[in-house]
Image (cartoon, rainbow, N blue to C red; front, top):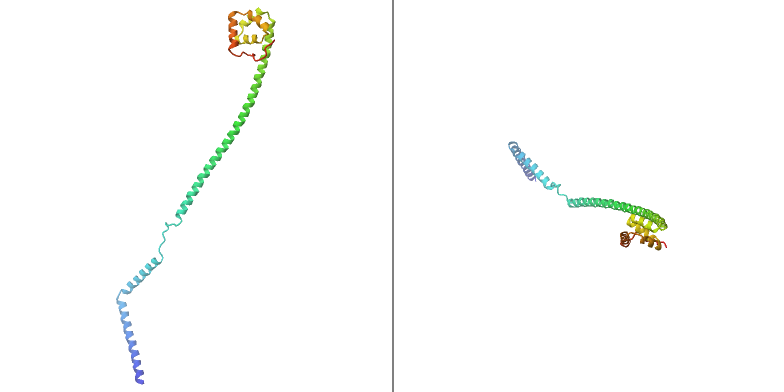
Length: 204
């Protein structure tokens, strides 16, 4: 039994000695070789490579929302263009409304002026008619030979207007005393167109 224990102790000691010898050889090799630095470098390179593989650098130019952003920008620009056009149309509409109001005011002013002018013309016509009536009375009271002589010297239109307003009896007497050439000229003037005052009722 004692021999067995002694043998085990010898084996343990022998194993320890072998390990010590092996450890000494390794230490000696490390002291005379650059291999450990090489191993460290490889380890560092490997670790850096692993880091690069595990965390790839992201390309910032690759924006997944780039198309959406471009579309949004385009829509904003389009909306701005439409807004500007709408403003132009609104200004044009306001201008047309103002122009329409101005035209309506001008039309009303024109109608007022037209009424005023018409009234003035009627007034002048009334005054002329009164003048013709008074003048006709003068010619009717004048002897036919003198009245015809005066009519021959008047403007053809005025002379025709006076004769047309005279009573038939007075006009016949004056007409008989007119120079034949003057009578023909007055006849042509009367039949050619309306003479002033011929629309009024002839004096009887």
